[in-house]
Length: 338
Ligand code: PMV
Image (cartoon, rainbow, N blue to C red; front, side, top):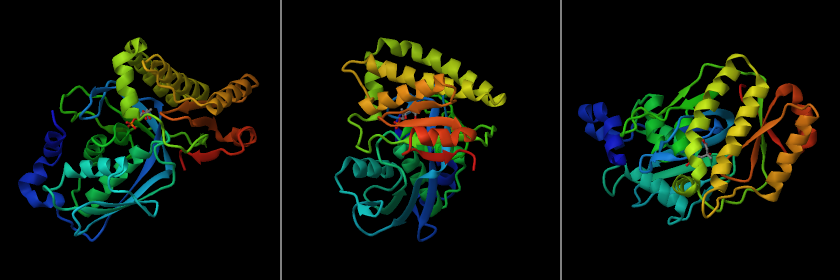
C-alpha cells in the first residue's frame, strides 16, 4: 500500500465534488497549532514502514502550550521555502527534504510550492516530539489554507504519514492512538480520552539540545529487526495500556507514573538489546534517574519517562512542584490540564 492511496482515500469525497480544491488556497494564509505530546505508553516499532502504522496502540498526554505554530501560503518559486524559528532552512537539509516530500503527496506534480513558517518552542529532534507537533501543525495549516474541512480523525491519519506520533498531536489531554488492523491504516488514528487530571504536571528536564545521533525511525527498525526482547514488547504495551486507563479512572498517580516509567525503560531495554546497540542515555540521563529513584525512596511521588533522546520528562502532581524544582532547578514545568 502506498501513501498516495491513503491520500486518495482520505480525500475521496472532496475529489469527487471538487477535484481542484485539494490544492487551491481558499485564503491567503493557513494557520495551525499543534501541542507536542509525551507518550506514557510508547509507540515503538512499525507494522508498515511506508505508512507509519504501529505494531501496537499507544497513549500520550499533550503539553498544551508547548508545540508548533505553522503558517503556510502558496508562493511562486519552484521550491518550498521553509522558515523555522525565523531562520531559513537549507533547501537540501534532511528537514526540508522530508517536509517537501510530504507535501509532494498532496500537490499536483511540480507546482503549488509553499512558504512555510514554523515556530516551535521546544528543541528540534532532541526527543521532545518536535516532529509530532511539526507535522500535526503543518497538516492543520494545510486544512485551513485549502479549506478541506477534514475531521481531526482524518487529519490524524494524514499527519501520521509524516511522523507516526503526529497522529496523537491534535488534542489536549490524554490521547490514544490505535494501531488498527487494516493494511491501508484507515483505522489507525488518534482519539482523545475523556479523563482529566488537573493536578498532573510534566517537567521537561533538558540535558542536551543536540540532535539525536540516530533517528527514531532508524532505531525502531533496528530494534524490530535485531532485538530478541522486542517479541515481548506488544505484551508489555497491552498490559500497560490497561493499567494506565485504570489509573486514570481511579486517579491513582503512583500507578500512572510507575507504569509510564516502566514502559519507557522497557522500550529502552529493547533498544539496548539491538545490534548495533541503540542507546539514548547520556551520563546526565542516568544520574537524573538515580536522583529520582532516591527521592522516591524518601517519599516523593516523582516518576519519569524518556523518548528517543537523552532528556527526561518528569511526572508529578502539583502539590510536589516545589520539591521537584528544588531537586532539578532547571526543570521546565507544564500543567497538562490548564
Ligand atoms: O513518531 P516518531 O517516528 O518520532 O517516533 C516516536 C517514538 C517515541 O517518541 C520514542 C515514542 C512515542 O510514542 O512517542
